[in-house]
Length: 155
Image (cartoon, rainbow, N blue to C red; front, side, top):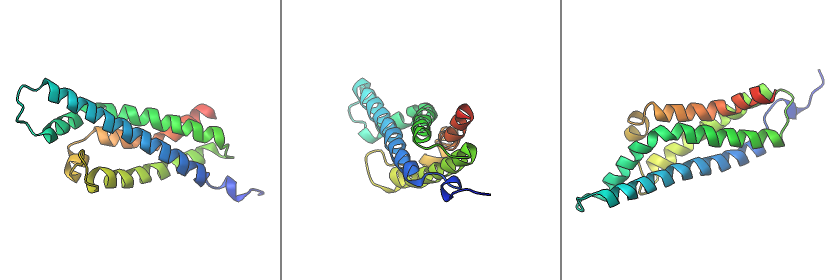
């Protein structure tokens, strides 16, 4: 059996680059959707004594059904660019490793970004993971399967 170390694992450098691109894009889309929807609700409101955070919470709940679509689109696009720049010997194994790697990083960094870091859109863990079902699970599955789906198309 003659093979190189590069044949065994994904291209970590490219996987990290495309993960960062995807992570910024998908969370930017979510934040823009929440912000825009919250502002529209605030303008429509006849009660001017409502706390702006309530509009943000409402906008977050309304944006949830779109989240899996954002994730599937962005992560499939990132997978495409990853595989255009990296042609592994075993594309299925590489896609599985890349999907798991991106999925784990997404779980960890989104938990930090959306529940730990203080900002206007901050959520409690219960809001993020319990009240966002099934949308958040579908979004995370999209991260995991995007490289796999693309590998089936490319193979």
